[in-house]
Length: 142
Image: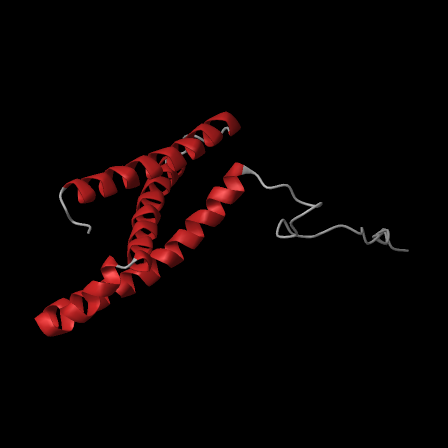
């Protein structure tokens, strides 16, 4: 005679198995949105760095090559890409600092996580505005 018991059969529950099931099953939260934005900005920085490398190669190739790039930098889409890249860089920097605090075990409670999240967004926008304000005031654009 054995003392082993047979486990009770489990019933399949009809619900989503992942928070990636957005909509009625999963509500967006600031922390999840900022986490997603951090990943997207990391990809954007990789692509932007390739564009900067291309710009540097054209600059090193001489004036004739560089003059082919300049019209694109001063076009509306070139400035939009530069603006997006600068915000992406500032956001990723600020959120990276936030993650360093988390790595030290600080700021995990919900109120602090939300305050630091809002701070990341506000400071990244302020830094981007400051960079562009300086660039425009020094005649770097147009």
